[in-house]
Length: 335
Image 1 (cartoon, one colour):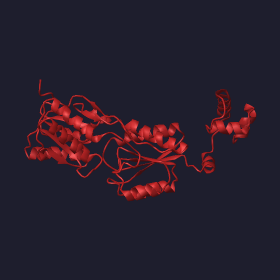
Image 2: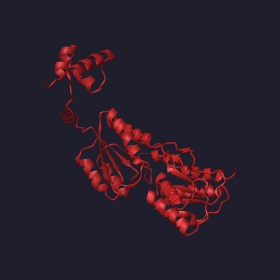
Image 3: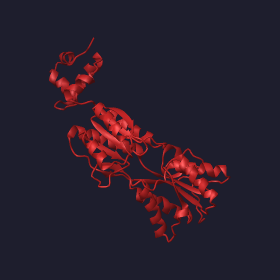
Image 4: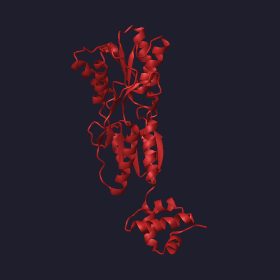
């Protein structure tokens, strides 16, 4: 039997309008009335027709997520944070991959338009002016996670990469390291690449340590760029006591090659990562890392998009705090 709100109203002895307000969380009732109606609905096995509700409200109850298709670990935590809030608020989530450099973003946006998503979360993709205009054409709330735009005119949630990179480098310096490598960074990445390079350079400068370009190995933030960087250090016989990997993936690549060549971390080489993904504490040795709160970032991003859908208010940008998580991959040379 298909249970209707009329059935619930009759048994609960309230109006159908009151039942509708309760089931749609629209307010205008007390908690006692809500409990009575929900108890009756559950007892009767009522299931809301979301398709009909969507047609009435001109809403799909879907949050779209666009992210690059890259070989890094942290995206899982961001998506889990997004899906946690979406489920709590009665929304579904669809995900589209926009390519490593966002080169398939147009296709992703078209998919979101076809699915008539109510809001959008874009993860780490740096948008051009034309791409921003394209997303704006959807006329739905959206937020950027772990990225921003040059003019800062699109709402975003991220950490301060410059400050975080400075802190990572300073921690190595505080432990007596002066020959510090920087590995796996993409020098044309305005959001995460350039700020991490500049934060690294500034920490060296503030401590009177000359910058040496031979210590910087570029890459794409991946495990394999970490391996390539370490192979390059060894091949070129670069003298160094520590390496700042610009992601945990990079740091693990460095540790892997060090192990293959008989180097012990941290006795022979100290390594610090960035992101504090779950594998950081699983590595051998456990990896010291800059922590970005990815789950919280996804949670907050989805939450404020849904609030904007419901309230029509503008989404504010937010810088969230990072944290240096100290484990066992850095040796103190001053002891």
